[in-house]
Image 1 (spheres, rainbow, N blue to C red):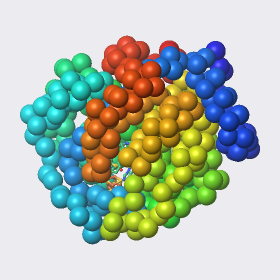
Image 2 (cartoon, rainbow, N blue to C red; image 1 turned 30 degrees about the horizontal axis):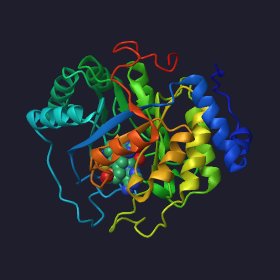
Image 3 (cartoon, rainbow, N blue to C red; image 1 turned 45 degrees about the vertical axis):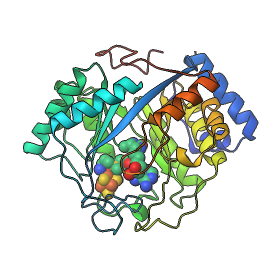
Image 4 (cartoon, rainbow, N blue to C red; image 1 turned 90 degrees about the vertical axis):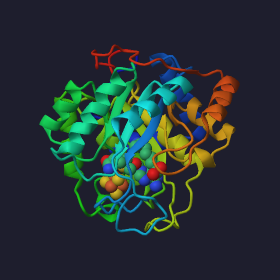
Length: 331
Ligand code: SAM
Ligand code: DTB
Ligand code: SF4
């Protein structure tokens, strides 16, 4: 078994990231096979439970109220709507539902009470429930955990050095604190980033260092390729090349060997061959369903055909125990 390290240096990460591509993929695939059943892929389905009108200024995001995108703003969904959507996702093969809200932070009000009900209701379907609701306090994290929340998603998005260029309405430290609050409530942590924001390779390495130097590695690390959306400040960013996704995924796999690395936004622009390379490089999760939060994603049927072709299979829910939440220690 590979040793779990929390003291990777930027130099070490950079050396891995820049190694010859085929060596990098070979090493990542070897680490993957030593630590996990590489043919199992965790399937998450995303549901935007409250869409648009967000007060933050994240320059990649179509849901920020200050940018003029074609997005239709939608108020918080009802518990019944969410339960229905969760059942559909489960029937299609998803083991996890991730509910996203375009909020800056969670507030202790009736909307949060409703989200708590949503969490209980989806948890009762024996699905892993994940939320991404912006910043939260330790007591809010605890309320979510008590309702049966399995994971909290809170991305770092880029490096600490680059953060101000992308978002001015909160700090990197705010982000790290929310992750800490989720940890204290014994939630599993999902945290990753986006490539293609105009960041440097050093920024990517710096973000990977922050993630891999956490006292406990995030249980999931999503690697998103920017989906440039018209009306956002980053609308004209060129798409990242698949090789950059492969390098990011492979490096994350090597330095965080037990973590679920998710090939996240950007798959509609990738061929099957591109995606196969990402799985070879150690990706073992995807978002499935024809929509991410607000932008398109490949259909469930296309993804199942891809799994068939590549010999992959969906991973069951709570593989490591509903309450064990120690899944970095288990395979
Ligand atoms: N408001 C909450 C927050 O910011 O944490 C939760 C929802 S927010 C949409 C969740 C994540 O979606 C962001 O952290 C970012 O990583 C990702 N995201 C948003 N827009 C994106 C885009 N255009 N392309 C790729 N990823 C994006
Ligand atoms: C993550 O890392 N990516 C997801 C999820 N976590 C919340 C969101 C991707 C959003 C892509 C743009 C959109 O569909 O609005
Ligand atoms: Fe709001 Fe989250 Fe979008 Fe930022 S990423 S604008 S916080 S919904």
